[in-house]
Image (cartoon, rainbow, N blue to C red):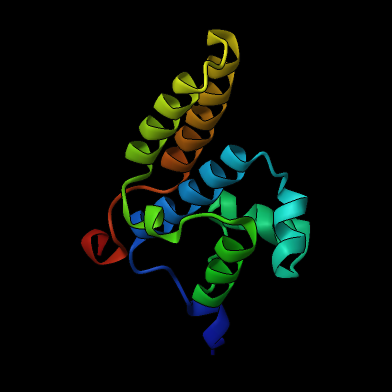
Amino acid sequence: MMSKRGSRKPTNISIHKELSKHLLLNRVRSGLTQEQCSELVGVTFQQYQKWEKGSNRIFAEQLIELCSKAKWNIETFTSPAEEVLYMYRESLRELEYSDNMLSEKIAFIRRKFQVLDDLMPSTTLAERE
């Protein structure tokens, strides 16, 4: 008999993937490390890393606490991550970041987004069954 813990699977992978992208984007935007974010909510660095990679899910209470302590706007989590990334890029331009620094930050985030896209297909489990 399989334990309940081993049988749990995400039912909506696209929402899970968006949350992971938002965690990454907000962390990079605020200049925090994964270790600093993990300390804010009292989890290990490895646990936070798994949230960003999409291997584990973050609980709503942890997300609310993280957003509060890191001073992230939780409402941005309801917008597609790509839209938030675009707004972030525009805000950096307004702050007159050098093109090189801007390109490096955006390229880093895009690479991480692509990894998530490759690891987690956008379909739900119900659609695949």
